[in-house]
Amino acid sequence: MIKANVIVGYSKWKNKIKNPNTYFKKKFNKLSKITYFKKKKQEFSILLTNNKKMKDLNYKFIKKKKITDILSFRSKERTYIGDIAISYEMINKRSKSSNFFLEFDKIWIHGYFHLIGYDHKKLKDFKKMTKKENLVLNYFHKIN
Image (cartoon, rainbow, N blue to C red; front, side):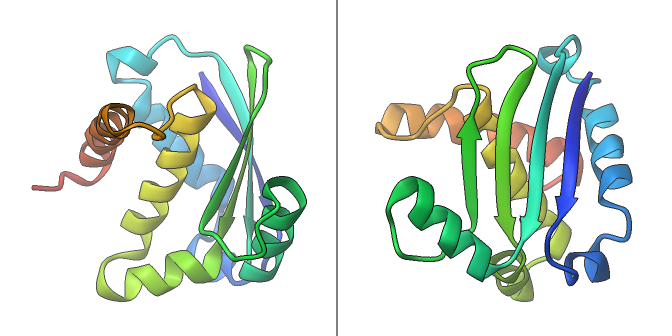
């Protein structure tokens, strides 16, 4: 089973997602119905934070002095696959022309795929990763 340890580091997240642990538990239960994810035994942490913390983390680990929507830190372990940090303000801003939960799911799914080894440095890798992300997103939101 896939499991997320959710840390709420910015209170405004609770305005949108009352119980983040329950939110992810439901998503992972649904995800486990997809053959590819059925037998996965993975755990990771998600920090739900703000722009200031994202800028600090981005500088500390990536050496870039700018805000970013998500950061993924992959682990070399098999079971504990890494950490993700997500900016509330970035998701909330994008959701003004969309839907908060759709934008949130897009971004954590993207981070999750980084944790399991996908990347998008080359165009063919970008296409492969995007295709898998969209399959999961469509499964959650029935887009099209």
